[in-house]
Length: 262
Image (cartoon, rainbow, N blue to C red; front, side, top):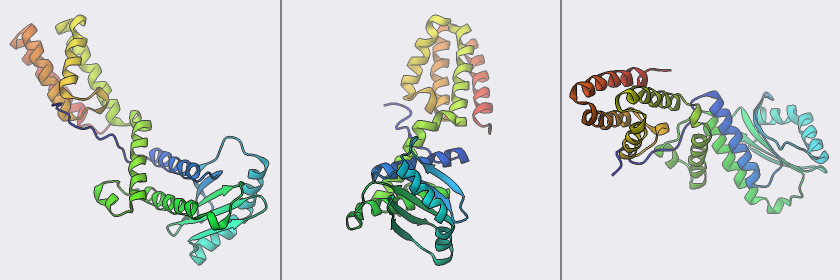
């Protein structure tokens, strides 16, 4: 059985950049799910926190976007002063769907495609779901089992899906990933004089296989286990004295690197 067990490949927003990426991802997913043209997350003061806008807009989409901009002050007043929760407005240029996100922010979706109000239940349900998800993200709340249990199935599934997307797309930017790459490079540099380049890759490959994960996802416990495996191999090849000296140095290095804040 692999030492590592199941690796949790999810990630919450640890930085402002990650939060913005999550918000933009949710807006893109929400507009694509309902086949809408433009999605924006704004504050009632008019600030745009995040948006999902196609690279190219047709003339009708420009008209609808400009119409929104002209009415933005009125919309913000309705949201902040009259507690508007949901609005569907149809114009010649298209349809605008507005949904409140807490007390001080809201979502806007624009589409120039023909929309029948009587057939919008699915779209509005998706917009409400997106509003709940965006509010959760914007409030920087955690995504764990207890929190997910408090939401309905659709919202919980979307939040969980977003943490997997963030992990896949942004994990290599985290300090954990950078530390793990640094540790691997250090061990390689220290191991090659002891076993030679010919056996280096074989020893590390077998060690990672026994630990049960790869460099990117290693934790302090995984590295401790890997050092034990590698030291045992060094002992077989170079004897107890060399192995014990290497183990002292490597474990001291691991402690200093893996417990640092940077």
